[in-house]
Structure formats: C-alpha cells, structure tokens
Image 1: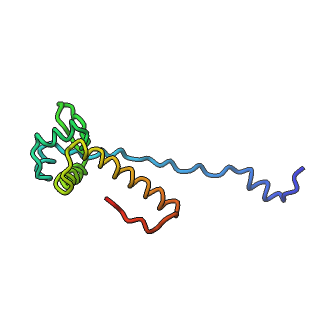
Image 2: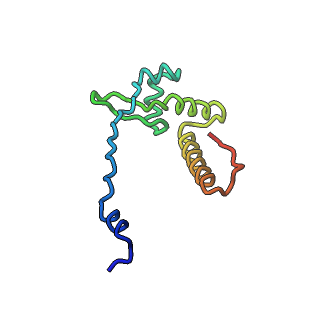
Image 3: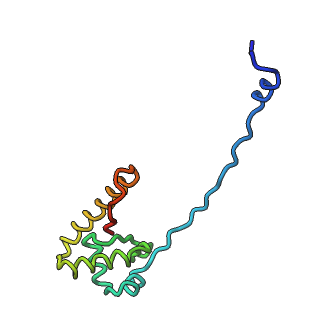
Length: 124
C-alpha cells in the first residue's frame, strides 16, 4: 500500500509527455577548388599540389578527381609560407613543426578547460 495521497498517485500514473523530436538538417561543408585556393592564397596551383603530396595541406578528391579543399585551406597555406620564409625551413621540417604546433594547441586547450593555467599564450 502506498503512503502517498491519491492526487500524487494519479499524477505519477499519468505518463509525461514525450519529448519533441528534433530534426537536424545536413548542411554540406563548402569546398574550394584548387583554382580558388590558389587565387585566394596567392600560391601557384603546382606548389599547392606539392604541399598536398607532402601532407602540409589537407585536400580531398571530388567526383571528377580534382582536388577540393576546406575553407580554411588558404590560411593553412599562409601558415606554411610563413614558416618557410620566417624560419627558413624545408618542407619536410615544416610538416614536423605544424604537427608540433597542433599538438601544443591541443594541450593548451586541455589545460584551459581544466582550469589549470589561464596565462598560457596562444601560439596559433
């Protein structure tokens, strides 16, 4: 036997309304062609192809086999160019430096989330 009043038993026996279903639209990520990236970054398309082959810039292939890039590709190319001219690094070294900079950014973000250090300067 329950020790709750009848009103409470009746209210709890009624089912709660089902949560509304949320539908999300799938929005395709805009891709940039090789020519668009070359124009926006001021880098020759052959050099961009070389960077892709070296793994310095990420690209995918479209249905026709052409290179397509994320919208952030011109910024990534500018970063590669800055490392090349500013530090006089060869392209193999630039790949290592980019990997290390990405790793540092991840570690700094984890420290910020943990609240451990708030005085870490951003390096990107």
